[in-house]
Image 1 (spheres, rainbow, N blue to C red):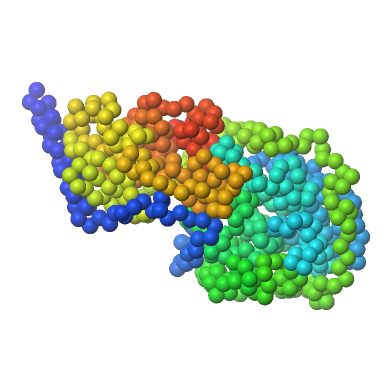
Image 2 (cartoon, rainbow, N blue to C red):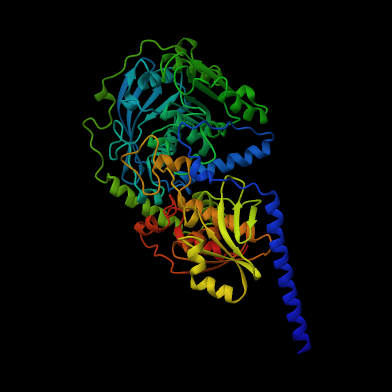
Length: 614
């Protein structure tokens, strides 16, 4: 009995000492706290036209870690993590046109089961066994890859590069020319839950286009590149960021720090959170890249701003000579002068390949559209799907991948990037009697009520805020036990409710979104993502005084807490009640509307991760 009393006194003393240090830490932190007056996630809305910071890195290892992070961010944002299984392309190559020094053929590829990608293959007739290969995604020109106007000519580009000794595959954007099973702009909250959207589908098409090019016997697979303008430039540097097979690159009229590309095929939820086109294009370093800009569009400052920033990344590798930039006096374009700049750069990195006289365009005879069009007198295969059918196939693919064995670290990191959250290294707190405000130092403001008591801090959460949490039966029980309790007003709940502009700019009327449209979510977190982040911030705060954090959550807050616990590096004892159903897309849209969450495995994966030892 005496030993038992001694142990009880020691336990009480330890609990009191922990409590003393816990609230002493609160008050000490409050003396130096710098809490924002308003939550930046609500007040500082980023759009495609927001001026973005330029990348700046002092050390190569820091950049290489950032580069790997960006690659994963692109794959997660586009629904390509992990990459879908690669079905047989069932490539059809036909309708050869003979030209002076080149041939043109029609190409139809099954890039995803039931979805077909159209394009043209330009080949040299110089007698060489192997040639460098180039993929050419096009921009938003009215006739897509077949546009032949002063501002852009896909056929002139393909013919000229073929004469110079390259095999070129020019292929469609979704909804253009011969790739018409889907409209160019499509989307919904349900599609976003599974990571399906125009950008991801087009990036997958680009990867499959590179698969096709590398399958050709006359292509040197160790020497493949890409070029494209406007939306095609976006595709080219995104492809370069996620596919190491590219060895040279020339994005035209797109790399800007104040305009990131406004079309839905250049936008995906989470794609540019904390990053931009300049940094993503820089991931190609140290391989050869030419940046082509214009004087009368958003690339007008490229030589002064964006090019030096990218060049500084190349300098980390000691390869500044590998990146070049030029500016054409012209509006937004891929005109003859821009194309010839690309020819000269490619010839520079392929010495001896091209006849110098072929580096300027001449005697270009563009065939009739019917001669170039894949579907002119040629039907799609019988298994061709519409959007509904594509979604069904995409969803089945994602479910199969999530059911297959995957590494815990991969699953956790994919879910973390889907949630767009991070575990704060430091948390600042301001404590005024029972009122407490937390910030991770990233402009966030997490208000709540902290009640003193014994033992580890218990975080109590309700979707209606701190008042509702404290009025619940669980909080009453904890208070009866004399526990220390922290109840929070998570983002846009309780006292944290305030107007937030979630509209797309420009408006995506065909896809407005329930919790923000696709363009809004490209640059800004959703409300539910912000709530998960707030819970992680609270976990980091509580973890300063206890190894294992306790969370009591009800309703929708139970879902948010489950996802936070899944990605937290600190163990969390999670107690949930009245958990909403998560059996359908409608359930997620109503209770935890986060783009890509079902692609990342949803609640089932989160619960498995939360149960893993830390």
